[in-house]
Image (cartoon, rainbow over all chains, first blue to last red; front, side, top):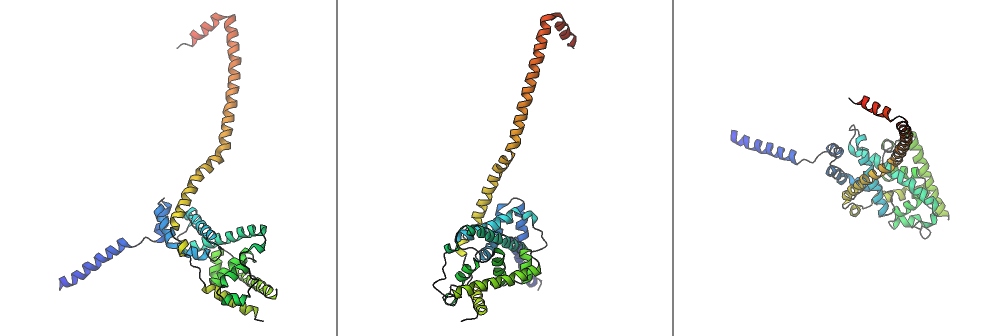
Length: 204
Length: 101
């Protein structure tokens, strides 16, 4: 009887020990490792979170070079500011804030470059198709990207966060550091501006 | 003519569903990030060196000026000593022997 009870217990404890040995390090442990100068810990952090960062960056980038630039910028900022990471919230929340900030800075840089070049230089041309046709043809992202390029950086950011990623006002406040009223007003104005652009296009 | 509000909603809904596939751009991304960080660490040493360059230039200039002033002072002193030796050589011998421990 004792033997029959002891065997599963032994197996279970062995398995638990094995599992705890094999358990992957937490984000916080990897952060501590990175701060101690272990590059492999930071590489693991990047490996673990790159999908999420690429997902957000892809909402703003127009080509693969910009995508790579934004994603790299996020992780370089993370690395440089790791010592400022307070462990009172999960690492991925902090990472999301850094990502939003990097995307916003990218949009502002883009805006400056675009002011030098004419808007006619945009790759996508809508002159040949209505918005409705484009949506039906599965080109909604292209249409939206084209329309977004006429908006201000903060309008692009808030529309992407609120309307495309469907984040709550509270989440957007956390990500951007803007006040609640600011988020609401900007979201409302951005939506109105986008609608105006589509209307103007429909009329022309 | 379609309602613009509805068109906008449809556009946003369709864009929401079309999640971009970034898998092929993520390949070996961590290697590229680490390479960039190493590169930035390397260049930051040079950046510091450049920032400190004016300080070192000021130090070199100060040392040069101090050297020049000291040399001029020495020339004056040496001239005076030579003159004194020519006029009273015995005093020099006495002063040198008096300083001997």
